[in-house]
Image (cartoon, rainbow, N blue to C red; front, top):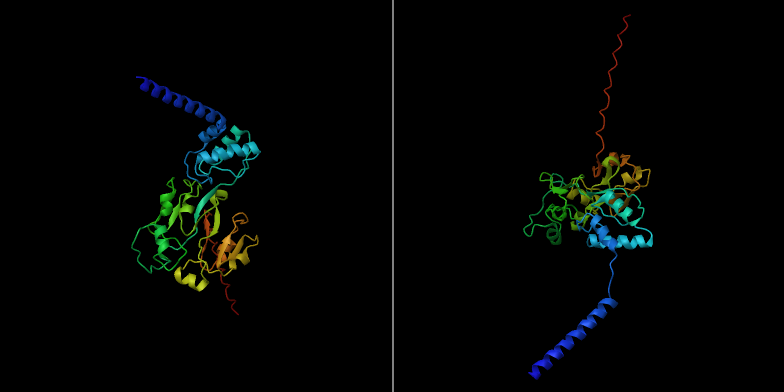
Length: 293
């Protein structure tokens, strides 16, 4: 009986000492979370898509609160929630935010089935990542869209789908939140987030092929051949030429569309512009009657 009592006293003493140590440690090393973090997190979209640059909404909420303490939350944005969500967050934190222009995902490849000849048959895991790891894919273009739909799988908002007629992904602008998940999923980086533009109007080079002109044209009839005509035509220095392909800076572009007119391969796309008005018919002048002598 004495042995049993001693064992109980010893174990009880050890438990008591451990409890005291844990209590002291919990008080000394306690991390007090700012209650505003949870309040901001509740205002965010809750998609945890990573489009903000953080692993989830909780990371963005913490960054926003820290930014507010430092005096600025510019550069921090929830692409899914958009301006309305960020305005509510700014009001909660007592901050003002710079109004950033909305963006949308753009597919920079115009190599549809009729413009890119099929040169191989791929047999294997049907994903863009797997096909890209094996080589150029099923066409001669080693830069264009592979059409397996990794971007479609990555999108949580049902905003991108593969067009079966062209084999290319198409973005639904009304559903796109510019989270960037599709751009990250594309192994060839042909999807880019660009400024949505006034009335959704945009001009961009729909090609990323870095091969020289003749090689690029052999692989795809709609490829940019790096001729530089668009850059020479642009008066706003919005177009640069590098690695045999042109690029339009959406911050400098004034949507004049002169580059579209001079592109010999129609690699430059103009989106959501009104259809050009038909040229007025020129009325034939009535022939003058011959004066009889």
